[in-house]
Length: 405
Image 1 (cartoon, rainbow, N blue to C red):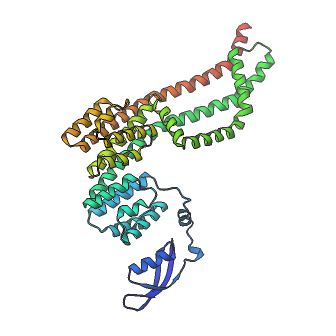
Image 2 (image 1 turned 180 degrees about the horizontal axis):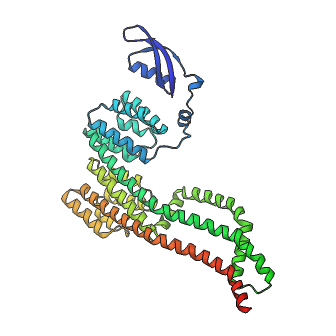
Image 3 (image 1 turned 90 degrees about the horizontal axis):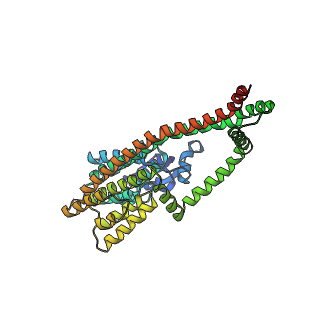
């Protein structure tokens, strides 16, 4: 992006000139023609106006925007559309005010393509960061003339999803800090403090207790190999990440995570909550059940749950109700299946799914709260116990020597 100087003829055939903000010469000419100006000369920005951020965005070297940035964008767009502002003007206001460079470029591209005659959904589909769910809901909103309502639903859906993620992150932050600090303290004790005691114990010439010998051996091992092991851990981490990035690796990893105590429950309930709320939002927007299931499956993070729900979709296509295959999934609560059955019978599946999502969200909140209450004292006890064992092991020979004297 930069300030391009131009010279051309306006609608009346009079010579005019000015400066316009654009990414390349093609865009400059398109923007000027949209204003009724026929450019004759276009001069690129000077080297002093070079924007390194824009260069990185154009080359795809900057990380895409996250849910928080997209949520704010969606809320602002919904407010302006609801106020009756034309969509092109809304997009222009948003891209000019946007601080995130990647989202700014995406919004500017969407504004240009909508100005060229494409629909908002079509323009969004070409940009990274706008999910299949997002684009399909926008398409439904445009088709039904209820874009402002759909954008409100999207913003509400994204806000609830972001809230659950934030709860999990905040619940894990404190235990992670405690483990990190505690692990550092234990490593420092073993590498720097224990060797000081070894020399004192060697000078006494007395027999070293088994627990003390074990701590000394562990200290020697950490002194020799702890720093050398860092590259090995890094390589193993890269290998593990690449393996989990494969379909088979992610499936195995997701299955193992689902079987973990407490964490497994949070993962299952969190994904089912996202599924129920997404399906409710999409169905309420007028999209068919089959297409809605496709969209929902694409939004799930867990490969195991996504596969199981893919099987549900196949059975729905074969003519079964949504409840029948869902009730056969062992981790899907029976009560929830019955709630969806009632929704199918009354023709209010979307409303019932929203209630199901609330049930799952409450359960996730409860599980997170229980996990936090359980983990904090457990971590403190374990770390405190390890430190206590190290200290007792070092002082035990001295106490034995004093008692023998």
